[in-house]
Length: 226
Length: 308
Image (tube, rainbow over all chains, first blue to last red; front, side):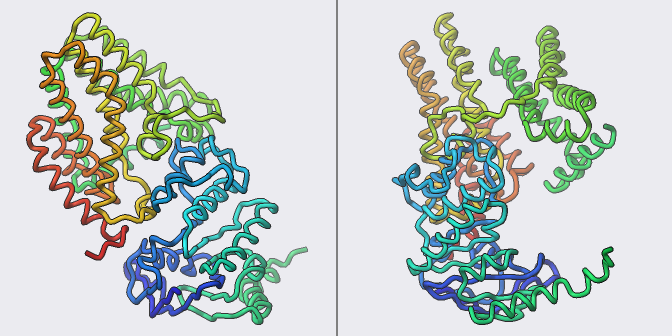
């Protein structure tokens, strides 16, 4: 379980997260949606303990960060580190030293090449593989589907569903609504740091429609396309 | 091109300001430290000229990094990129060439200028699908990536040690040994992105202990061929050789702790001055190391979620 109580975050005078309260239970997948700048990544960084905040974040397994697999939107790689070494680095950091990397290379990545030579999608797949091999209890995946090919998209969706089956907590953000509606049990909508609404599976269709209307509004009409 | 160099100046000034200094004062202090270090080197070893040349080339090597060169090429085109790169390398070489000229090493200064120009024109176009093998692959990242960046220096150091023993020049042997240690210090000069600290399920004390332990093990492995050869061929100098080895290790610990004492920022002037003073008076390390250690523990507490 992860419980967030009255979480707020200020950057200077700007309040980027406003009094958020959410609860994430084991064996469930949660989606966080919102426009750019809504506060999704900041929320993830607060949960991970990468940002200071006011309010409370409680977890049943402590400390939360030591059991959390965090996929950043744009994972950073050292210039001369191979894929295999990157996975080893992340596993060693969590005390997992004898990982059979080759057998678990499900995305068929060229592990002995420098990670910096990978394409955007391959980099994301490498980062996902590494956090999966860390054997975490919680997962935060910030835009996991961005840049990866359709086949890997299918594999990733199945992995997320498998994590649910294993009673893990998975929190995902995505700009592609369908990827969330396929996997999530509950979706939280953020706007300008505020929690606008939380919707379970039955309300996903209405939420998608509502988001479309808010986002598009009269914009296309104003274009006056001919 | 002029705008590019103006921008470089602005960026450099910004870095100096971030260190808490006025840019003018920063340049003056930098120059003073450089002159003092240079003088110290020339006083201490007859191989200072090689160290000066190698230091200059290693700075220039960083400037010819592939992504950087690609950016310059795509922005300015081939011709202007070459001009920029030559100018950059010549600007970097000015203090090094000056010190060589001041020491009347005209041929060496000339060689350094020629190397600087030709180094600027070398473009690393190759996309390596295979990585440079490293003995440190099991425990990434500092030594595995650092070794790949500087692998060419190790055969040079080992060759120098071989020559030193052949011509019975103890000082050259010590120099080759120090060259390996100095290279490893560079592996810890830049702070890694916070994710790579955060990801460790360790307390700050454990984190630092492991960093120091692995660095010491790896540095010992790299220096071992020189160390063992020197001990075999100069058994009477065992105390001196062990002393150099110990001081080398202590400096490695200092740099690691210095890095995390400034984390997530880069080591700046205060830390740099402390390290520089320790170079002149190594016993200072016995107080510098605990000082940096306590500061590092404090700096890492938040990211490693240590509530104690």
